[in-house]
Image (tube, rainbow, N blue to C red; front, side, top):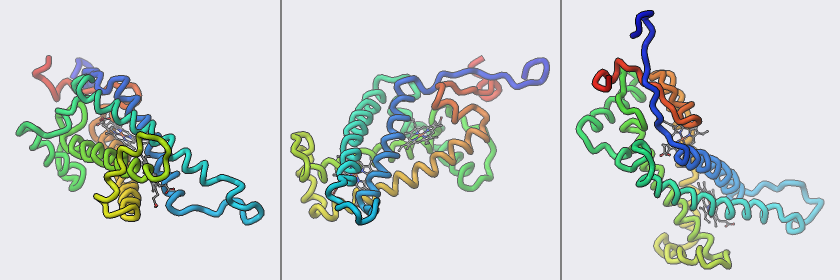
Length: 232
Ligand code: HEM
Ligand code: HEM
């Protein structure tokens, strides 16, 4: 507290520019791939029967967008993987696994806070909290899964050499139909994660008062000095 009774804060640059870029490019890709993917799975008969569907090429365009954005999604994912080794301390992969006893305790503490809503603050992590780190790691695995299954599906319809590298996955999934089904099911993992993620970002923004939401725009979080007296 300062003399007038106001809390004092550290300003910490948590999410660096490349990480923020990867985050929002990834979110935009997930949105476009989700919408175009669900349209591919359940096509809507737009425009009525006046013109023959093959003359409109509507679903050709929807599929083209899905495949073009799939490449952006892939390169963005590779960029984020690299940034987990080259980025600032908060972007590094070591943050995403609860390696210390304190971090494992924080997993329970955040569960208690988010699910049971009976615990008291503060959560000490400044970047992703320990539970969020585990969930983000699982999401990166889901992204990898969606890329692998997507390019394996694409291998049977693309003339390019790159998708053919994934063709060997088709028999592993028991053929094209189950592979496509897995790709479809994982779309709902993204829908569920994104819904929960937006809610929890707002919830922690409100609870912690550190600027969680705006941190993914400007990079900064604001940490109460009283939570980290050792840093004075
Ligand atoms: C978050 C990422 C993605 C989501 C949410 C997503 C979603 C979907 C969905 C829901 C379908 C329709 C499945 C069905 O019901 O039959 C689909 C089809 C497909 N997706 Fe994705 N997808 C993603 C990423 C990718 C990637 C990275 C590729 C790589 C090329 C890809 C390639 C394909 C292909 C080839 C099809 C089948 C198209 C067809 O048979 O006409 N997807 N996707
Ligand atoms: C409108 C949609 C979204 C909003 C408002 C949003 C917001 C945020 C915020 C505020 C953070 C920082 C959390 C913190 O400081 O503890 C964050 C981090 C993160 N978000 Fe999102 N997010 C969105 C969509 C997505 C999507 C679609 C994904 C993945 C499928 C995603 C994956 C992540 C990951 C992995 C992180 C941790 C940082 C990193 O490793 O890149 N987000 N998000």
